[in-house]
Image 1 (cartoon, rainbow, N blue to C red):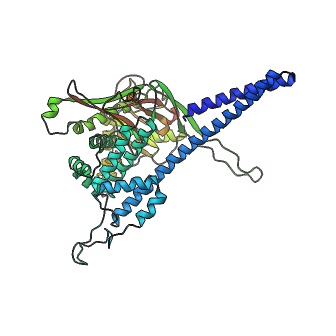
Image 2 (cartoon, one colour):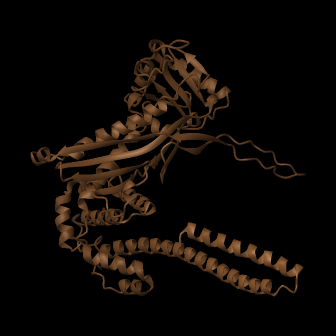
Image 3 (tube, helix red, strand yellow):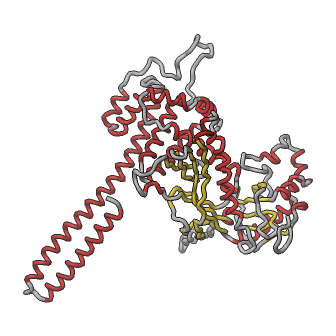
Length: 532
């Protein structure tokens, strides 16, 4: 039963208990009232039945939760066993249908099928030890990653589950599983570089034939292609727009209604307590500040191509425009953040033109924040600069001297990570060029602050296709970035009347200024205006 249904049962039980109490009072006041006694007996029996019904419903709800947890654990254990079975020769790497059969059996009844699986004969030597060539000739074969078809088969199964489900919770779970596979197989890290190259080199059309040949007919490989592209472009957002990750974020896959107010919290520094032998440790409250954010933006990027254009080219048009679509959506998010950089929200400011911006200015701003008690933790402070001011800082003599005296001068602008503008840490600031920083009629040249200075919250739209189950067409998925946790709704559909195909990513979001003391405006001139 649903939570609402159980709540209704509890309300009914409480109503019956109130009736019983009223009848008991009536009988107590008039012991000869036989009709009241009969009603009391009946009401007590009905109340006991209602209490049992509530208890049964609650037990069933708990059992359902436990069953779901057990199924998830069994599925993870089954995947590990399948992988081990492929490695030691019990299963063939490309025998996807047999692997899937064992996965289903091991998930449904591990107590019965796990001993059977473990008793399967292994090959004489497992795949890591087989030799292709003379012993000692360097001809050993080492498994560096899963077969691409297996990876795509798992992704296809997740996309299929998401497409069939009308439950938002199931779609969110599928998005998390999909992003976990992406993080483990497709992210270009040193650990899985070879696997990523093999996956990208294995065309989905080839994987389609192989997976269907193994009788996995519900492959949804077209959906995989769209989801992979969206996943990749979400990953790029944190590199193209690093400010999305530099301030307080509340990224969630939970639905929200338009113009709903959500509460996020920014963390402040707690008090340090001195131990007393007389009173021990005095409690200190967790220092958090609530920030109200109105989800007042519902934006997306729909891309549509007509039949003639799609039929006249072999180019993967949706893939080509995916990065630009995510860039447009990311820029809208960042523009909304920047709109909060006003005198009304941040009363502290530094007046310095772009042409004269230097390292000494950065130090002065850092000192001002420190004196206001803004945390000086590693990675906590961020400085955004208009490109002209950023360029002046790059040309500062002290910065140039450092760059020429180190063996790797390129770290001046390459940074320690792809998202960093400067590897040189000035007064604990990570410094970024912000070409889309508006003047906000405040002569804005830059902004410096800690994570608590600005807040952004994102939510996914409600799935409108679930209003009339079975009446929608196309495909609705949620895609979650594994690193920063931002989730978007991906909608793909065709219009047979117009002969068009459309792909859209969308989300809802809101922004707000955080702690006033935690931010400092950098202005080219005092007062209002658009001077840089």
